[in-house]
Length: 90
Length: 264
Image (cartoon, rainbow over all chains, first blue to last red; front, side, top):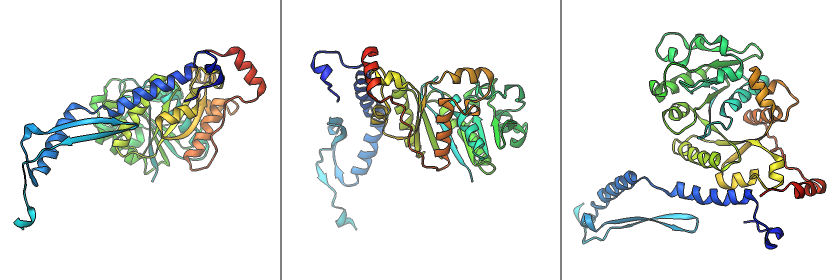
């Protein structure tokens, strides 16, 4: 962010820097915004894969997107009740 | 095998068609064989901007419907060697064409031309997917204002998902004076937000209006700043390394002038 001497002396910031700040905010939101249908599909696909290894009840699953600084984190909680020991089966 | 480049923007009115016409002509002036394709079915304009509107007989729709051969639908620009236009149908709409059909046309054109430039319609719907279906690379045109840049970012995301790369940015209608007094974002600001490669900055040039009125692309008149900017971009597209021109006014006199004319 550019804080010029003019701004320190109480002048209004330039409209170009306001534009840039506003754009940065809104574009970060645009990029982060995941379609609900995509989230539901991802949820099903993840559950399908995890079900090969773990036992869990479908309604205990929680999925969330979190922002940390400039990056976004997909947090998925799949509390499981049992681990299928795949080594034993082979 | 030639390259297929889609010229797109998201937002309308930022200069896609003007850029396609000028870059196509500029590449032909550099000795390349070029086909420019209007993908704006139902709202065609590349023909009138290039001054070829009276010579359109067939369109891409006729080629798709097998009413005529692709080679017969191409209109040759008589002012320069190696430049052809494939017009869009004006009486159909975007849903009448499938992405695979556009891709087939582009793939055929690339066997006979060094460059195939596809002028995309505005928006992120079918017209855009048709225009980008056969593209290897993309040129995203934007102006330095918030709505154009926001839409450009959206289009860049879609192009990246379609694995089209490189995606090069043309910053159009740039005003050194407005940047100087703080009322317009400069190229560094725009690149900081969009984070793609800049292939050229085209300054605001009233010559664009008169050249469009006449149907003679600006690049035919060497002197104008806009023409020079498009020629530089065309050279970069052919692989020449030319540094990005710095339009920003520097020097103490300009700083004093800007201080008096500054706006917020």
